[in-house]
Length: 149
Image 1 (tube, rainbow, N blue to C red):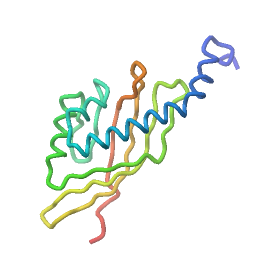
Image 2 (cartoon, rainbow, N blue to C red):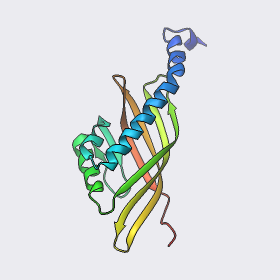
Image 3 (cartoon, one colour):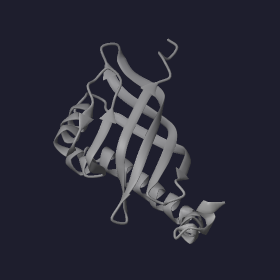
């Protein structure tokens, strides 16, 4: 009860009232991210992340900071047959409006030694509101497993 009487009592309600707008902004950022992926623009993708943002891909070391992120995304995009789509199933904005969780699924297509392959998996992205712009603080994903032959 004491917290509801404090100086920030109204700010949580304000953040909750603006949650749909924040969710929509993150959705638009996801659309931009997908467009940059389709254009194979690793440099621009790396700028979607915070300065200390991190991508945690399975079987690879953490890529943290924009130079490492650009290198990691660039390597992925150069793989033969590369194609990536993802879709948020849930976006939850923290009550303070400064962080958000984006959870969903992805499909990654590549050309392998035996032809085209498709990996289906899930992801979690943690967004941070930096000076009014939503940026990716952490991005982690993994496969649902080997697709049936």
